Length: 241
Ligand SMILES: Nc1ncnc2c1ncn2[C@@H]1O[C@H](COP(=O)(O)OP(=O)(O)OP(=O)(O)O)[C@@H](O)[C@H]1O
Ligand SMILES: [Mg+2]
Image (cartoon, rainbow, N blue to C red; front, side, top):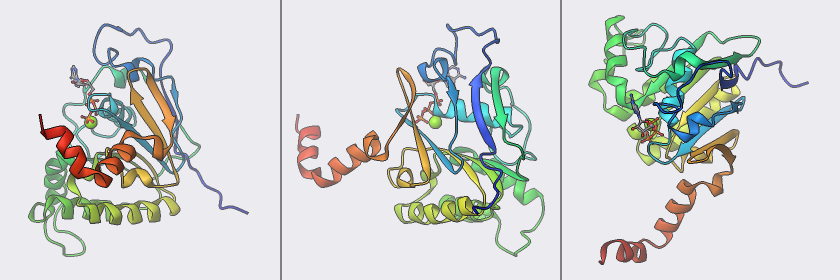
């Protein structure tokens, strides 16, 4: 018999149909937000992909805040100022599974500095490791990821921003271990490496809304593969005139 699991912890996300929303104003001017529909995350990993500005961080942040996590990243205990990130958080309906996990974290590469300061303020690392501020961006990011507990719900915004290709491969291994120990992730990413993770659903944000697509149908896979296979020719096309 498969093990009894409480996943998915986050079952669905939608804009409250009763809510009074202004389609002329941010964030409802973003097609993916306007056409959010009912978003049903995968029990293991859900990826948000799409062009810059497609609305991935907007939706991720609103989910974080709707679940009580800080918009600027961290655990429930990190800084609580500036929670009013967008009107979306007030109208988002999130449906949780029958049991919410003990651990949750919103990890954004761009605001790790604040999270590290918070962790330093808690006192010395129990395992005697140096302050996260004294490690490189990627080293610190991996340290936080490796400290995640199996039974947890994790939102990551562009984790690859901190990570070399090798560390992205290592991150896949960590994510897989955590998934098998009971974690659920939602990850906004542009990384063709991370997107290859198989126990996942890829949601593509574009001008028409949000749709599920396969790995090889993502632009990330196709463009990266094409460029690496033909880069001298592609450079010629891009740079010659
Ligand atoms: N506070 C705000 N007020 C008005 N517009 C905003 C605000 N914050 C973001 N936007 C706009 O909303 C759109 C979606 O931004 P968002 O950060 O969600 O994109 P994204 O998909 O995460 O992009 P990227 O891949 O570059 O991270 C962008 O066009 C952005 O300029
Ligand atoms: Mg973003």
